[in-house]
Length: 538
Image (cartoon, rainbow, N blue to C red):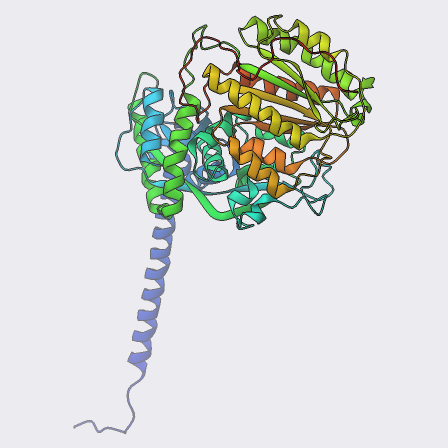
């Protein structure tokens, strides 16, 4: 007897099948989850904590700063393993014993650095590890800077404005007392000096030599108003400004094994370089940066290459002392007058110059203090003096004080004499100016026009401002831009330090980069008098 349909599907079997299928899928999903979880756990365990061969220390030659540490921390978080060893990093300052070097600059910079260290790279490809902003750290308001503003007098506006420099340019900032720390000179400081010098390698090298005794921390402790630095190293209490958006690339350089670097350490360095290439944006320097890099490399080599000096090379250069003897020099500094402190501190320097074959000339200046006299400066002891500094020391002790400081006209006159002496002797001549400020009425424009007449003269002017009157920013700027220096001294200690630095240039054993003369025997200036004058015009 046949079966007849009742018009309804048989759902009993269908439901059972669905339930079975769902259950099976759930079992499979749970199993897959458990397996994947175990695999991930094992992987993390193997990478992060279970390196059968132990740890491997990757020694990295780099500047220890927050940006470098951030990169190393990022690498650490990737749980690097090389040859079954967990890679740890250690930062050192020198390349000699490192397996990896983080070197700012270009391939040329890298190769020069490696050559000096006697090391070789394991590859010709150096990925960009860091890109660092370079700029100016400026002391925040209320930071009690020891420096005066260049805008303290309305008529003393900056020469950069007169010459049309962009206020956001490095060239504009160059005349604003920017310190480029040179004690631990890096490629960053060389690039900063090059930017401030307008691309002139000689001026840039001189900036670094001028500040060779100053570190970043020294500049901060002395509350310098403006310091060239990188953004990651901006000191506390300072704001950061990046003129013209200049960056410096730092390259990751894996090194070959050596007597102190094992094969595994060298492999770890290569592993780090691959990590950098895969995880850091590879940005090439722009045209402006490339030019700065190239020049900065020359500057770095120039500054670093300090050959052993022969006794003849180490002879002191001739120095013209230009001393302010205005009334302002009678102000108290420490337990005596500013001028007395100056004379006391100058004494050993003058004798040392003589002992080392140099000659010292002495000028003093103020406003005219005798009827019929129109100039403020007096030549007291010429370069031709043969007393080996004795007449300079005794004459300084006889000076009286009075009048106003006619500084600009006196400097221009001293420059003419110093330039002639440099021409005759074939050696640089130094002017050390101790001044309380400027009272003569030579305009900024006229001053710069007259100063530029000595642009090619082999003369270094070192300006030391003492007392509480405003700094002559224009004179200070020109001096710094033409192989000299400028500083402010408020205490006997600061005055002593700045005189030390000024005279140090006289013993540097270096010709001014502008000089085309060769060293010759001492000559006499055609403008020098042959007798010692001790009478100031009173």
